[in-house]
Image (cartoon, rainbow, N blue to C red):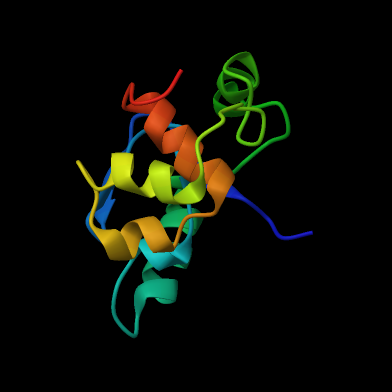
Length: 112
């Protein structure tokens, strides 16, 4: 099982056209360039990025909201993508699986 990391308390990052706040899951992909993974590891080493613990606050919040895969909707993928195009570029939408797309739409208030 792959280790998961999150932004440590009191820290935030901006990378790859996305903002990461305290408690957000983060990967080395957030850091561009050939040295992205090296920068990621440096932040892990200095404590700005920490390994996620099972049952973290972020996961508990997701569970309270129904989690990633529990958002129920009768909309098709095409209809979900149309809603997301109002605030996201098409290439970013294409990278999301259905569950993550539904979660983003729910956070933006586009679906219930």
